Image (cartoon, rainbow, N blue to C red; front, side):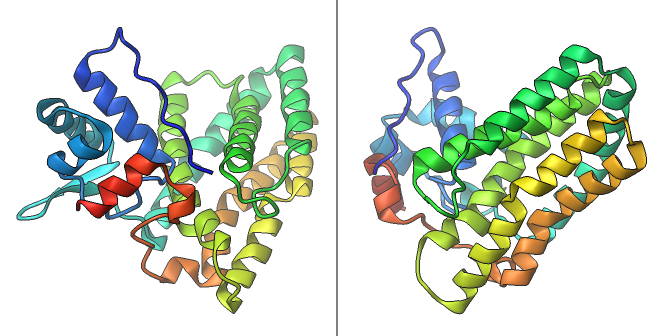
Amino acid sequence: MDHPLQAPDPAESKTDQAYQLLRREILAARLPADTALRPTALNQAYGLGWTPVREALARLEAERLVVYQRNRGFAVAPVSSAELQDLRRARLAIELPLLTEAMEHGDDAWEAAIVAAHHRLTRCTLPVDDPSEATLAHWEQMHEAFHKALLQAAVSTWLLRFQAQITEQLQRHHRVLAILPTREGGSRDHQRARAALRRAMALEPHTQLMQAVLARDAPRALALMAEHIGATLDVFESSGVGQKKPARATPAARRPHTARRAASTR
């Protein structure tokens, strides 16, 4: 089923509309890694003006969602196991101190929010069982909400800001390197990817993490968080997906008509 594009906010400038639209498409991997972002093609596909597109791409480049190469122009930032390894190090450096702060400062309301977020996560269908866009988006939302709840009582606003940026980058990597490849084919690589994803998405590690955090068992909570942070990279390395060149396009059946036009006019 095609994923509908959100209607632009009339209060936003044309540049802001272009920025928000392209940002959503990139984070959701509907504009896949390495896709050329030519203003003419984007204008034809999304109805975006040339000047707003150029300004939006410059903003996205600053966020490392877009890269610029001489003689090639703008393209969606690549994904790789090396990039994911870098994100893993960043998460360890930022999320472990945040979790420590949260356990030190968390109150009853914080604990209740964690339990509620965990409960909502238990009710999710895993994307590995139902690879529809709706299921994937819902699981991503509930999974992110659970991790956000864990850290909500932390006091470092800068670390929380950095953590939010890393989370967005990881969303794109999860889709391009792990979730999207399991939607197609029945090869041995895809079977291994599905099995690894099922282990990474399993509820039990999240439950154990929640219990350790609520018990204020800092050594165990930090160890479980570090293990959980490494799970995504382990999925790629065990399945072989991370060693392969990422697909340059998402399956046509899963992409909006406008995105298909963008790919065809590259």
